Image 1: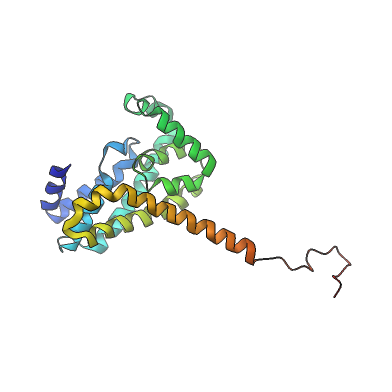
Image 2: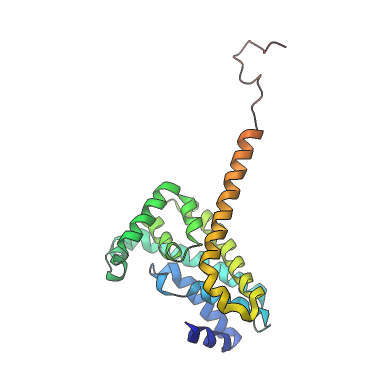
Length: 215
């Protein structure tokens, strides 16, 4: 992997853009992205942006777009060819992990798509599994776009601020992504709890028609 990193850091800007976009797109689009270093490429793109060799704004737009479009293609592949893909030898070797991912999708629905963006294996297979399960595309797109935006911007900025420390960042990235996903889930649970306990219905509304509470 270090050789790949060094090569990507030394290529001209247009080629760097193309390689990063292709790797991010392909992670989920071909359903077997767990063998592709898409997240690492985004980190290195951020490093390139920190040196001024590529535009940070262009990188962020490119990464988010490639993530969302790639996942959409993965969704369509799963919807139309999911059974055939699951029968591939490379995929069958990971049958237990895929079964757990399918169970996660059944339990969490769109949130599984969102959270899957922050784990390498789920990022590769969740779009295809969502298509295979016939999740409504509007639901898939909403959670896919939200996950792609937060993941793409977060990982690229991580590389941007890390600069030459990219190797250490890359080694810690899986745990960082998982931590970010946990923080987002906890924030969502906290918001739900606050709404439940601070949005009490008017007692008059709960009183049967024709009766008002005694004052």
